[in-house]
Length: 526
Image (cartoon, rainbow, N blue to C red; front, side, top):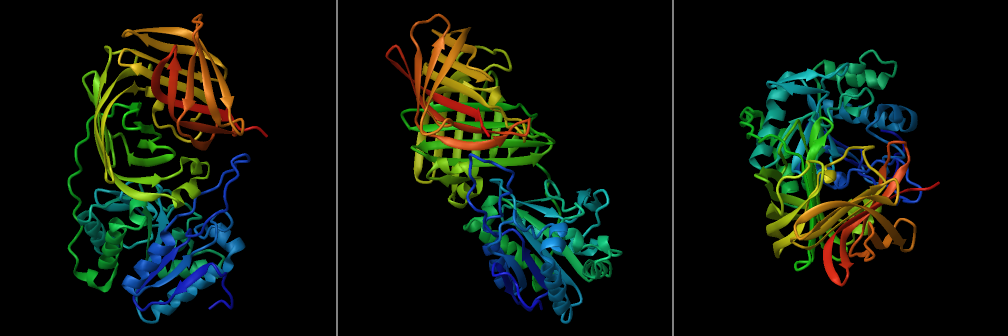
């Protein structure tokens, strides 16, 4: 045993053949949004979950309960050997102690995946094709075939019974040379470091099987799904799993062809705003649902699925003639102050898990228009969140520009969209300047006009207080006032960052009141 360990490293001794590791259970300092830099989010609640599972199994556990992964990343072999060599010593010592009582040792490395789905990505250094594991690139598999067909299969079956989806290396295959799981595989059997060599020899000799568990938000936050995940893992990796039935994956549900869709509206009667979209995100399909619930309170779901899907977790958007249907049933993170999203980790830490169900129908107010243009229409349906049931009857837009965008696909732009009634609305999106073309619908007839946007900011240059929109030669301006603000920081293509603020807004034009949404993006200066 090392003579001294950092105060943030928690060790639990157990008697079964399982070693649990939570490398990213710490917290980072608050982010200064004026000086953004690339900072990873720690895996919230993995420390607590790992200790819960260790108690359930009577397992040994090594838990980082306090160190920011941006300072020391215990999942990166290079950082470990340079900055935390004691961790390798500890790993070898603990496995050796367990091997004195058990021929084979199971290692479970617990991580967080910041999606709103009850989904676990199993990382073993490869991918699964027709039930058989195949290593990715130069990676080594960290499990033996018998272990995969036995213990891991039992875990997947128990998860399926609890409504938890398991995938294999969909996002985190644990195949990178520096990934900790590769140190628990035969990959480094010829390495110069004797500790890495020892771990590899145990793995090659069949004495070590290791699995990386990447857990979605509903599986980590306190609640029934976290309890179900702990129960499934205890049943599969505990001593009673030896007689578990083999894993037989169920038939995947069919998916309608993906029709990328994005919507937004504000219902003034219910004081509720919705943004949602499904679209391609690289090689996956990304989905997003954001609700402003009144004031600064929000509810957020983000998810992703491999390949091209019309459904992401519990979120489904389907074309329906010229209109569309939107269904969602699942979990969202609910936060009382959207302003916290300037620091993603702080926002997640302050969020509670809530179940929500919504069913909405969108009917356009005119026939099919240009595919890339926003289309006004009417939203009807219901949204249930907690004890609140909202009946929706609101005007808004089907807006292709809302589609999910990946890293580096953001812009510093201004967007205003308002509905005054079913036949009168406007939408303008301005990037890189103060003037742009605006879509204006009056008495159900749409036209495009040149428009100019003026922005009055609040305490800083990034927070809009009011907007003034001048449409062509019309002497009557349109004014808008934000009703709530959700600020985020996003990278731009040139390596700089933009601060983007968005939310619902109240509009006024010649005494007429309208409702809609706004987005204000500005590049962060030096």
